[in-house]
Amino acid sequence: MGIYIYNRDEIKKIGEACAITANILDEIGDLIEDGNSLGNIDLHVRDLCRKSKAVPAFLGYKGFPASICVSVNSEVIHGIPDQKRKLKSGDIVGLDFGVQYNGFFGDSARTYPVGRVSDSAKVLVEQTKAALYKGIDAAVEGNRISDISHAVESHVRKYGLSPVHEFVGHGIGRKLHESPQIPNYGPPGKGVKLKPGMVLAIEPMINEKGAAVSILEDGWTTVTCDGGLSAHFEHTVAVTERGPDILTQL
Image (cartoon, rainbow, N blue to C red):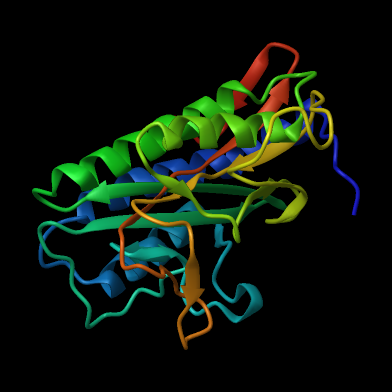
């Protein structure tokens, strides 16, 4: 599948979906507290989508049963929010969420601390977020896809952290997942050249310890093999002549 080059009007429409995504993530951030159930987060997201006249992008996607991915501690991505499971102080929780609005998609992720967390958890969350912005800084006309990948990996390696290899960022726009794939590791200067009009979901998934992951029996929840913590941040970004435009940043 080829890489879409979106025009300004299309990017504006993608931006509308991204703004809804960001606003809903902002609102549900208030629910990240000791004692709240993961299922409540999902129910609240569905209600906010209805009010925004947007469709949760993940609900039913390849059979996924929830409107948002909620991944706690050693869960890397694709955690299924369970009504019986509750957050507790010391957890970190990754929220990955997107919507479809008027035929276009937005996608974003954030990792939150719950109450007081360990120093190592703080470093993981802070530096995963910092790596996202390093990757975004590399999303400029004339660079190549792996310049984003290298920027992410070279930042987190300074802190002894490991980028996940099996899951990657991606193009986005008329579909939730489009070409190109954007790994979070590798040498610079490889892959397709970035051009204005490309829209990319850049999403570092970074582990506290080793990079190895496995998928649980539910077929979705991905966890670290060594039990270490994992963090996840994501923005939808348009490549423009003026530099990267972060569409999911309010």
